[in-house]
Image (cartoon, rainbow, N blue to C red; front, side, top):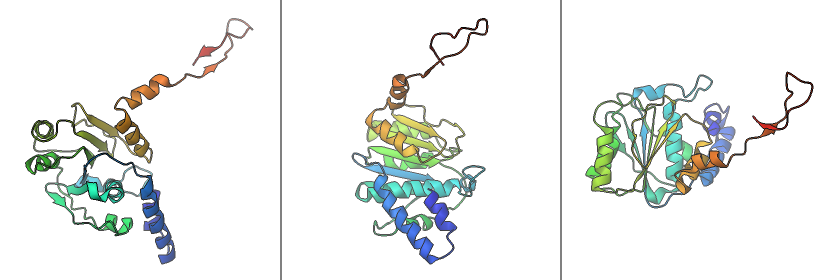
Length: 231
């Protein structure tokens, strides 16, 4: 994701071309998914906010780059959409450089009608194995939980949903089973996704297997050292 920032600040064509090639090469590090995937990126007005106080990147830029990277890594089994108060699909070519795909997606502004994502999949009877929703989760209008339940009931009861909250506001729109809610953003998110795809209890199991380091400390009441204790 630093590649996109580097591209936007590159001083000339030579540097831009080098960064563009690096972005396309990085696609090989994207996780692979079983079955079909639908990716929905929020392009509402609030997504123009910076992803952090220390970054010039907006939430929309991060979300679109994330979504387009996943799409380009698995183009024949992945569909990419954007949404605000409307849902938009795109006719894309996997031969297009990633940077051009990212810069070609308009950020329209407006409201955040998250429910349109799952409503569309349900109405079109699109069977997907996983859904990614990239948003700041400041949704309004419609009932996204009801749409998710309806999709599972009518189309695919085993679908997995990844709700990526790019601002880390911790708004939980999907409290249901088979939903993975990730608040905040860093490049480590891909490692987390890989873990969760292999084991839905991966984060809990990782914590359980973590060995607490031990240290030695002095007893303030004596001059003798205490035996090893867990910190």
